[in-house]
Image (tube, rainbow, N blue to C red):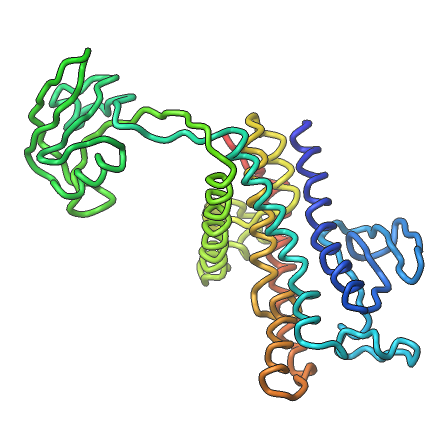
Length: 360
């Protein structure tokens, strides 16, 4: 229960932080922001401070900051001339539209960094944790706690050395040297073909894990790698989700078929809260929330109007071409993007209610 509440609070914070990035950047570059809301639809609560109204709306599906002149069809009052988005320089527009995703990437980086720095990492070592039944390792007589020191002619000092040796030796007979009870033993083994990678030998052992504490800079490097991997995973997931077969599955959800494969399943805030309620490991929970920030930032970076990346693409086009973009022609694109996101969000909500995600 606590995990679910924490996930819900975290989502509200992430969305608010995203919009705060836009808001602070707009103020810093002299733009007028008249609204800062979490949610959409009817107002639940609001208050005015200076020229900005802050509040909460009924549908908790995101948030927004209203910046004068950002809506291309908006008529600007004479008193606001000079403080509109459309009048600002390219770099000022870029800072404003990218500040939200920058904030989410920063939050993700700090969360990943904290996980790596405070918890360390478990790295595989060339010592046997378990032996797969009916595997080449079992047939050769490898046992738990055996330390692999050589595969064929390759010396092994790390698990990376072991995997590289298996790739080089390939399927077929070879020898493996292990250290058992402080004695070196040479075993004959007939490596099988790896089912996942052709030409690589399959031994059939699980490595032991060694816990290592890491420093500030190593944690920063690992956090950056995690963000980069998250960006790639997000693009891969989007590709899978918009394939015709996936879209057909989503249409089936509307007809009552909620058996959607996990690899193409969209997840709503309800699903994230459900995942949070099942989490038992604090570090893993924080990593999941960091991943949510990466997904939010990456999707917003897509060069599709009216996403943040779309606004940046328009500003870049105007900078390069020297003329204003025809925003009326972009309205169908905006409608299609909003419609697609609404459709996926609606499907995700149905799935998360009817067929909740299980971590078990």
